[in-house]
Structures are given as C-alpha cells and as structure tokens.
Image 1 (cartoon, helix red, strand yellow):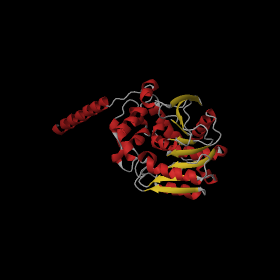
Image 2 (image 1 turned 90 degrees about the vertical axis):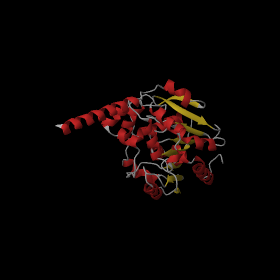
Image 3 (image 1 turned 120 degrees about the horizontal axis):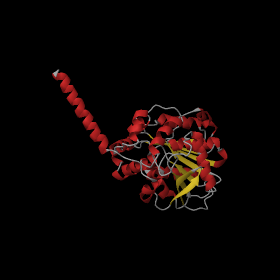
Image 4 (image 1 turned 60 degrees about the vertical axis):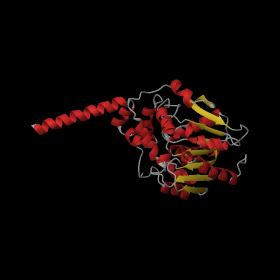
Length: 321
C-alpha cells in the first residue's frame, strides 16, 4: 500500500510539473500585422499571387533579364538567404519569397502543399514580376521545388543551384525534434498552442554543422515566424503532402547547368543524396563543404556564395559578376 501511495504521489508531481512546463511555454498565434514591423521591413512587399498575400523581396538591377530566385526550406523564411543576397544584389537581380505554409506568407488558401502546386506558385511569382526565365536556387524543400519546377516548366529555368536538396527517398542520421513532433498527430495538436523556444533552438542547432554558430537572434527569428497564424497547422500538412514521389524519375531529364552544394555534416539529408543528383543530372557539378550542415548557405554564406559566383561566371550569365 505504501508503494502504491508513493507511486501516486510521484505521478501527481510529474503531472504538476508537466502542467507548469506547458503553461510556461504557451505560445499563441501571432497576426501578420504584429510580425511585420520586425520581419518585413524594407525592401519587403506583399503581393497577391496564387490566392495568397506572399511576402517577397525583389532586389538588385531590374535590367537583369535572368534573375536569381532563392527558395528556402521547411520552417525557414526568405531571411535565410540574407548573406547571399548581400553578396549578389549589387550586380544581379535577386528575388526571394516566403513559401506557402511558412514565414509571413502563411497557409495556402486551399491547403495544397503538393510539390506540383509549389512549382505552380514559383511560376506565378515569375509571372507576377514579368520574369520570363531565371536561375532557381533552393535549399532542402526549396531545392525540391526548384528542380521540380525545372522538370515541369523547363522553358522558365535557365540554371539550377540545389543546396542540400530533397526529392529522393533518404534515411536521416538525425531529424530536428520540431520536425518529429510536427509529424505526430497528437504532438502537432499540442504544438499549436505550446512551443518551447528551447525546442526551436535545438532544432536549428541540429541542422548546423557547428551548433555554436546558432545565435539567440537566429533562434528568435525561427521562433517568431513559426508563430505566424496558421503556420504550425500548415507544417503538418506540408509533411503529409510533399513527399518524394514519381517525379524524381524525371530528374535525369534536366539538362541545364546545375550546381550542387552540400554540407558533409548534414544529418538530415545525407551527402549520398547529393551524389545521386550528381549521377542523374549530367550537366551538374557537386561542391561539398566539409564543416557545414544542412543549411550551408545560412551557416557560412561567404564561402558558399563564392562558389555560386564562380558557377554563374563559368556558365556565362548575361550580367557577369
């Protein structure tokens, strides 16, 4: 009887501590209006595209006939490309935007997160900005969207830059905890109202080769933008709908200059996926950064954008760098 009482007592303590923990980490949705002052300053704009109010930045010379379009990955935002944009915008037009389900763009109006629809959104952005053809550069999910757009709309893409891109089936060494929880029906429901900042920090550290480079400011950005109303529910739908599929069989049809950038310390999408892209895209070259992880463009923008500049020069972009 004493053992039973002690067990009940310990259980009550555990429940109490859990309630306190959840209460202290309550994080309700934030409106776009509340987030805009901090995360959508100049040169941000919101454009009505594909039934959504898409958060977008369009920088550099408008005379550039083949702009560079930067597409971020899961749970990121257009801010992940800040370093690359600073290095490119003086001589190249650079367009970046928050994908549906992420950043300040938020949920897709019809809850459609298939890869085909994401490609349609990219084309809609190009059409809105009167861009006939461009260089698509994407990381992770953004890489998947980039090559899928090249496959589905080959006349709109002149070159590809795939950064730790997805699209093939793969086995991760480690998955960010926030991703794992978002895939669970029970936990994803809980995360709609509870989001410990420590969880976000741990998840961002997981995709860096050197976790010590993850700053409080960086964590704050990922944390606050995840609170944009509707984003947490949309993330679960994104995982369910955007999976590697039959479109991957067409990757070998890509015949435009393609740069593959990979972090050797990527624990989410291993280097073997990059090697598979290299094997199937005959016009590709692969550059591996030994000390970087899943988001090398964000972790070390200076080193990675240098490779991008060299690639663009070699392939005779109309506005030479």
